[in-house]
Image (tube, rainbow, N blue to C red; front, side, top):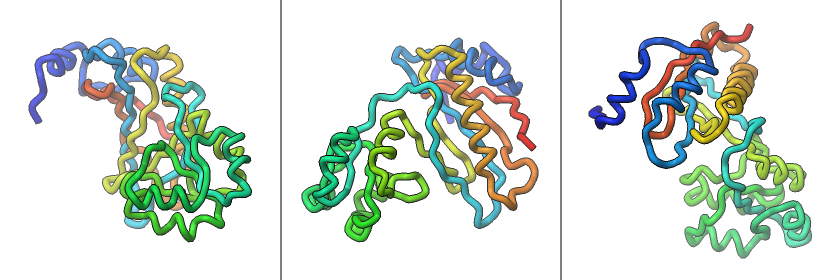
Length: 226
C-alpha cells in the first residue's frame, strides 16, 4: 500500500518496529499526527481465538470523546413517555418500524424492549447491515429503558472481534489529554482480558497497536493479565 509524504515523514519520527508503553504510545501518536482536523485515536487489538470463539461486549470509557448519541427506543405506546423522559431522541413502535423499513436510520443506537423484538427482528435488512440491531449481549434489548439510555448517553461503546480476530475501537481524540486517552486504553484492555473465552489459550492478546485516523500505528508493549 502506497502512502503519502506526510505519512512516510511521520514514520521517520519513531521506531515503527519498537513496542512502547501505553503512555509513550499516546504521546507518540499525538506527536506524529499530521492531519489538520481533530483525528480519532484508534486501538487495534489482535486476539488468538479458536474456531468457534468470539468476543463481543460493551463498556463505558472513563473519559468521553464522542458527541451525544441519538437513541431510538422501540417500545409500546405506554412506555414512550418513560423513554423520552430518560433521554431518548425517538421512541415508539409501529411508526418507527415503518420508517426503518423504508430505509430511515437517522439515529446512532437502537434500543428495544423484549416484547418488541418480534417486530424489530424483521428489520434485519436495514438495521443489521448498519450494525444497529438491538442485541441482549450489548444491553440494547432490555426492559430497563432508563438505565440503558443513561449508559448510552454516557458513551457506552460496543466492541467485537472481526472475522480475523481483530478488535478495532476508538479510544480518544488527538485533542484529548494524553493521560485521559491512556486511561481509556488501559480500561479497555483490562475489560477485554476479562471477557476472553474460558477456554482461551495463553497469549489471548497477540498484539496491540495505536494510531490516529490518518497516521501510522505504534505498537504497545502489553503484558496479558493472569
